[in-house]
Amino acid sequence: MPVAGQIAGRLDRLGLTSRHVLITLICAFGFGFDLLEVALGNALSAVFSAPPSALPRGQLTLLLSSVYIGAIVGAPLIGWLADRYGRKPALAGILLFLALSSGLAGLSQDTRLLILLRGLSGLAIGAYPPVMIAYLTDILPPRYRGSLVLLAAGFASLAMPLALFLVRWLTPLAPLGLEAWRWGFLVGAAGAAVIGVLCALLPESPRWLAARGRREKALFLCEQLETSTTLLPAAPEAAEAAPQSVELSAAEVRKRSLLLAGLYFFAPWATVGFVLLSGAVLIEKGFRLSDTLLYVAVATFGPTIGSVLAAFVVDKVERRTALALCCGGMAVLAIVYALCGTPFWLMAVGTLFNILSAIYTPALVIYAAELFGTGRRARVTSSAWAINRLASALVPVLLLPVLHQQGVLAMFTIIAAALVISLLLVLVVGPKGLAGKAVS
Image (cartoon, rainbow, N blue to C red):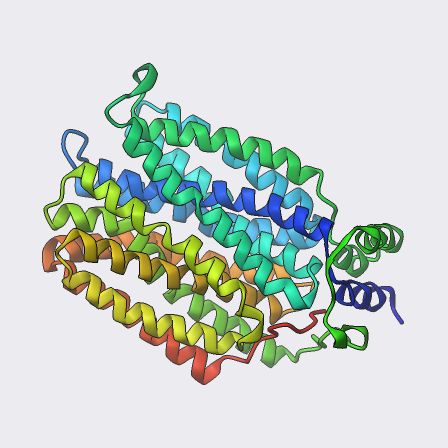
C-alpha cells in the first residue's frame, strides 16, 4: 500500500487520544481569539453608531467591511501556503500576525489607520477557520471528527460574549485613559500571541506529510498519536474502514467547488449580518448603547450552547440534512427578530438564531473539508472561504443603507432570502457528506 494510504488508514483506525484532545484545545483557543476579533467588530458597530463617537455612515461602513476585505486576500493565499508548506506553520503565522495587527489597532489614533489595521487583521481572520478545520479533518478520527470540531467551535465562541462584556464593563472606566474597545483589541492581541507560539509546537498533520512524500516524519508523528493515551475507543468498523476515494473527475471538482462558492457566498448574509449589525439594529430600534451591548452580549452565548448540544449528534446526522435544518430555522428566526420589540424576546430570539448559526458555520466548513482530499483540502476550502469573506465585506455595505432607509424588517427579509437560497442549494445540488466516515 502507498505510504499515504497506509498513514491514512492508521489515523482512521485510532480512537480518541489525549494528544487529539490537546491539539483540538489549542486550536480552539486560537479560534477563540479569531472570533474575539469578529465580536469586536460588533462592538465597533454599536460604539461608532452612537454619540459621542458616531462616525459618518460611509466611514462606519468601511470600518465594518475592512476586516472582510482583508480576508478576501488572506484566505486563499494562506490556504495555498497551508497545502504547500504545512498546516502547522500556517496556523502559527496567522495568530502571530493577528497579534501584531490587533495590538496596533488598539493603539491607533486615527480612523483611517484603524480601518487599515482592521483590513490587515482580516488577512489572518479570514484564513484561520478553514485552515484549522483542514488540519483537524486531517488528524482527528472519523468517529469523533465532527463532535470535536463543534466542541472546539463552542468553546471558542465564549470569546464573543466575553469580549462584549469586557467592552461594556470597561466603557465607563476607561483604564489608563484608553477607551474600552481599545482594551478589547489589546487583550486579543496578547492572547493570539501566546496561542500562536503554542501552535508552532503542534505536530504537523501526518496525512499531509505523507501526501507530500515525507514518509519518515509522517510515520513518526503517526506513532506518537498511536502511543498516546486512548480516552475513547474507535468505532468497531474502523479496523476495516478504508479512506474515501477522492479520485474525482474534473467536472465533479468544478461542481463541488461551485456548490461551496454558492453556500459560502450566501452564508454571511445571515451569520455575519446578524452578528455584525445587531448592535446597529438595536440602536435603530431606540435602545441605549449600554443596553444594546448587554443584549448583544447575552445573545452571543448562543454559539456555545448550540455547538455543545450539536456535538453529541453531528456525526450521526447526514451533513446535508443538518445544514438544511439550520438554514430553515434561521430564516424563520430572522423575520421573528425583526418583529421583536421587547428586551426578553430580542435576547431569546437572538440567542436561538446564534445557536443555529453556531451549528451551521462549522458544519458547513467540515462538510467542505470532507468533499476534497488532503492534497487540495486547504486551498479549495480557503478559496471558497475567500468568497465568504467577499460577501461578508458586502454585508454592511448593502445592508446598512437598507436598515437606515427601509427599516429593520426589510434588512432581515434579505437575510431570510439568502438562507432560503442556501437551503435549496444544499438539498438540490449537495452531496451527503462524510459524517463519521474516513477521509483521504
